[in-house]
Image (tube, rainbow, N blue to C red; front, side, top):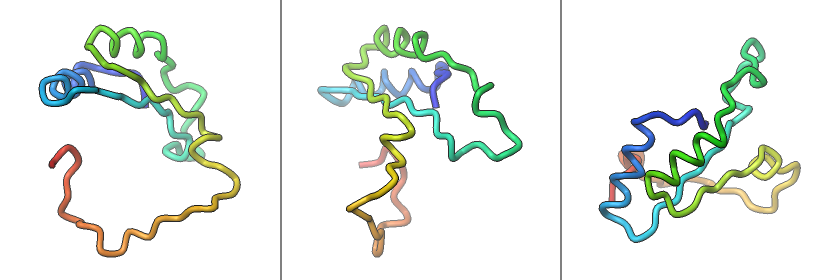
Length: 92
């Protein structure tokens, strides 16, 4: 969601220790805001975030728009039947 902090950057540092390439994504997800929350007032720190990721050694940053993520029509769907519900983010 952007507005990076030391916790986010520690993930970049950890990735650099164990991977050849580290890619981060920044996406302020409009669907995470309720009608009572103001997306427009969410902190916009994109340039600072990019500077911090660069300084941390991040190799690339993926920054999709809401239109890229939420396309009006989709020709592909994913049905997660049988997906391992015990899988935790970052585990191998």
